[in-house]
Image (cartoon, rainbow, N blue to C red; front, side, top):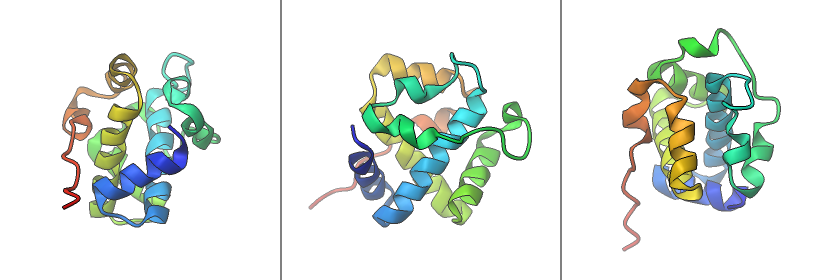
Length: 133
């Protein structure tokens, strides 16, 4: 999946403009890498489809140990990176995880999610697609 298609799916799911969805998608992916740590095992870049891994360049620790990030801190950091409020960051984060769930294999998705704290479970569950009428 190419990044523009990924962003389009995030945009539709979160009900956000495409430009804002792209910014949030980058912020979520960067924060995931940060949260997973710097090890090759934890880096999701190799598991992301086509061009998505290129948007992780420059991701790294920003403002504290990655291990300390719980779901609320994760969303806060996404919001700070993307320059959006918490509600928008939360909707965008859920949309990114739902889109990732469809963009990678089941095993790849489970691998990525397994590196997140257990309390992230609610964030990584599928969210319904918007009805296209």
